[in-house]
Image 1 (cartoon, rainbow, N blue to C red):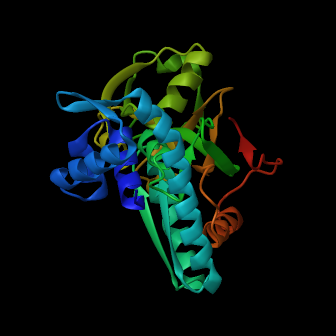
Image 2: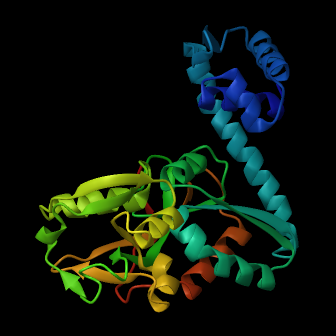
Length: 308
């Protein structure tokens, strides 16, 4: 049994597909099949049930998966421990961030980190919150930075003190453009531009408005904050977006930002990682820099909260 076989098995188990596993770990599908077959011959049991284009774990596969996960975590921990012999002089760090922190908070943090630790190869991946959470669960990322996140099984929250607020933005010619706030009931009938399903911004907006009993009309779904801002400026509707995302447009007069009377829509950006992965020195340094540089609330923040 080799670590490569274990990695291949886990990729197929996670993707429930030989072809998707091949894409995920950059191997050919025949090579994936060969590794799985060799592992099954050694163990003397089939690990997968083939169901057309998808597969499912057999009973033996489910038993083996538990041990395979431990093997993979141990191997990753060993690699990281050896890499840290050089301290922060060398190494790598892969960070994922949801759209808002990824576009409007992380670039400055990444630049500061690279200036301080030039020997660390820091890479940033940006996707919506759901995708980043899945990549953390799949151990594809060292850290994930997401908004309004509830800690899930196998995840650990390392910091939750980076505060963000969603504001209502309207174009300069809108009837509300000169106002600082409006009554929540005034949203009824207004065309609201929304992010796609899986976006933390969308989930937070919908929950906040529903809890407040606010009626709203989702007029259009767009899959990027920049598209939302352009849509508002073009007069397609109004939108709730992060204050971080519209600083430039508000300062330049291209958008107006206001609040709903009696309703603040706030969230924290959480830093998460897989609790089976060892937290590296470079990851700890990144979190420390992020906490110092990013906006934070004045209240005490929870740290290292974990849910089994």
